Amino acid sequence: AALRSRAEVDATLQAAKLNPAELLPAVHCLSFDPQAGGGECCLLQLEPGLCAELEAGRSLVIRGEKDEHAVLCSRDKTYDMKIADTSNMLLFVPGCKTPEELKADLASCNIIHSQIAGFSNNYWELRRCRPKLKKLRKLLMEDPYEGPDSRKDQTSTFSKYTTEDLLSLIQASEEEILHQLEVIDACKIEGYWRILDFDYEMKLLNHVTQLIDSESWPLSKVPLCACLEELGSLEPREMIEHILLSYGRKYVDDGEVFFEMREDKICRATAQMLLQNAVKFNLSEFEEVWQQSVPEGMTTRLDQLQGLALVDRSSRPETILLLKVEDLPEDNQERFNSLFGIRKKWTEEDITPYIQDLCAEKQTVGALLTKYARSSMLNGVKVYNSRRPIS
Amino acid sequence: SGGTGALAQWVLVELQGEVEPRQSGDLAGSLLGDLHYTCEGVPVLIVGHHILYGKVVQLEKPFAVLVKRGGAPQPSPTGPHGHYSVTALIKTKLLFKTRPKPIITHVPKKV
Image (cartoon, each protein chain N blue to C red):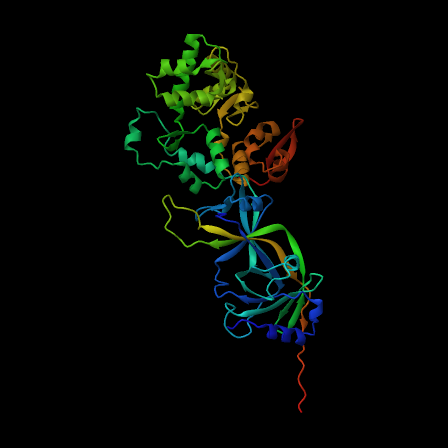
């Protein structure tokens, strides 16, 4: 179609009885791009901060496999995506100037032929969400690292994952993924991210704690070099360093690298090692064995086991069992169903370690309990149970 | 992704109801109308036999215009839904909500 001329525009103005003197001289003649409406273009409403990120040249990535709801990831945040419908028609117009821009550039061309690139009556809305990181652990647990002597590694047909692989499979931002890898003590072996098999991890830890004991080093000052020298013949040096990094805090003193061993984490790992051998334990027996099993100088406390073990003070005798929060469902409703299936009534103190990670930005545990549970009083104590009957 | 170079700034035009092509066939390639601004900056859109008055709105939440990139084969393990590029940002919209005023064309008298 031929482009509209000034004469045609003026004729239309006249027919519309509009006074050209009351209008800015420039006119946009809008037409639809031949490709418009092909569904190639869509609109994404940006949350605060995302616009600035894009303008700074950074990327946004949409992640999700066919069976997952798509999420959008910036460098450090994750957002759920949802379609919002509008009853209006939205046209996206490149090169369309605002009145301010026209006034600022009075010499601009009289007729601007603008092609509408696309149109839609919906757009993507974003809502900040928790990164979906449970899958990360699941993938790495497919093939835990059992040490260099393990024959499994050489003949393994399991998938191993590089950083790039994880970025394309996990619905979370890069920073959230890298942070989580640190949290779960994953390490890179031959370019692949691996989680240590728990037994192998304890074997490494025991080497270190026994060495600390035999050398009478203070727990707050364990020298890296000496560890590598003494243990280097038993295990790969990278693994020794990895276990020190996982269970200690690194610092430099007078040019030498030392580790301050993390009492809580070591006690917790020791407890896990003991608890995984049976379904339930007599609490007082467990506490005795546990204290004896940790390195000299460390003190065990039940609060070290939050999110790892559950104490039952209503049974006689009192018992303790292994219950790891990372083994529970990621979805809020499913998590609560699972917890109420394990125990009908929970105090806030007992349930908090098992729902803390569900809290969205600025959401409290109390808010979650109000939403997913019903409260009542039991022997003068406030307890929570399921809102729905458990089959 | 953001891509190299500054992102283009587009404008959103929001119209009430549907836009239908004058002739049969789809919208692609057809004219929509003339967009004017009054000296006070009020947008005026002449579409067919209608005059629409609107207003310029600075968007609190800007939009990104996403374009689906042609599907190159995904490297294994299987990749996400599809690759999108950000082709432009939209920070301004022209909102036309008032009822369109019909243009009554003057029928010339027969001589």
